[in-house]
Image 1: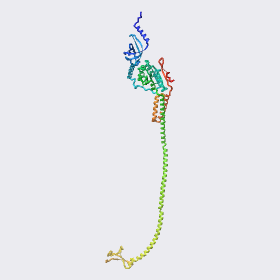
Image 2: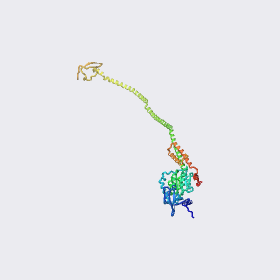
Image 3: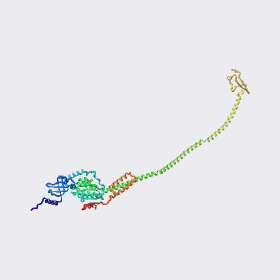
Image 4: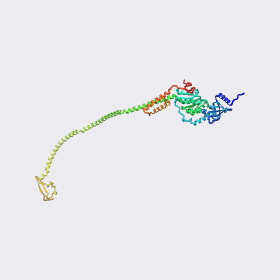
Length: 442
Length: 78
């Protein structure tokens, strides 16, 4: 006889068989009939062409899934099979999931992008500057991937002594997001890490999906250290790129963005140093020149004295010359005047005059003598004539001279005579006074 | 000054050089600036001359404790 099992026994057996046989498993399918009751858990059905399986995502897991589940979305998920005894149903308890297929990936990407953008995670104003020369670069990537190789190569070439700390993570698959988040958090605890590069090489859209994960986005957003994202190729844009402080198109590009070329820095420092030394020399030179020019000007009084002395020398020379010239002129003038004076010497004149005088004196004497003798002769002649003409002689011949008294006027005509006039009548050998008594005119 | 970041030191050095080239510093200021500039350029050069890089990797032991070990994959450093 067959053993009769109770329903409980059967379902318990089924439960233990199923759960132990499958353990963790990976399933892919399309979400349908999705619902989320008040509990916050998400229930749905994963279906394929001719089959389906119930699935549940617990509320705690939802937060780590990093994208929004939607009806019609293809996903690949990890989970375990569980039997719900009360209802005699089995279902998949999903603990990680990723969209699958272009459409789903795109859908998940767009959803999350929109949501995080609205929340302000991409806000340019919150982006931090990438340090110019980080002390240490933290790199979140696979320790065996192409990305780390490229970055090590390029950083070494550009700046051989840059320190690097690798936080190894898986960069694809559903395990990747929590590891990436953990690595970012750990690097944030290390003191001298100045920048973090979150990176992986190229891959399919599915491969890159961890970088479209909400948790990864939030981990980047919450990092205290600036984050550079460099995921896939140049054409690939991920949510991580939007949240990161700087997006590099490739891992190599990230390496170039994060470290300067050492040689250029060395040259810059050298040239700055040179410019500084040059400008210092220039300034020193200029100051020295100014100083010496001031020094010259300070010395000036002495020079002025010299100048003045020269001036004086010059003037006195000119004075002497001038004087000498003046002397000469005057001397010549003097000589000239002397000559003139000599010419006009009064002694000469006096001498001449004396000579003249002598001559004249002689002349006078001679003349006088001559004159005297002439005069004597004339006198004799005149005396003879006088004798002849003398009125006295006439008087002797009886003529008289009548003068009016008292003035002695000679009467030359009868007209002047008036009766009563007293008159003097001179006759030979004397005179007598008379009075007119009568006038007889003829 | 020694704990200055390279970037800060470089920026300060550039500022000093520009000031000196402008020539509007007093003698004392320019002497101070020159001295500081030389120190900064030495500091920058020193930072640039630092030895080989360290490439390390974060590892977790069984108890999830973080350890930092040299990274073997940096073969180019060899």
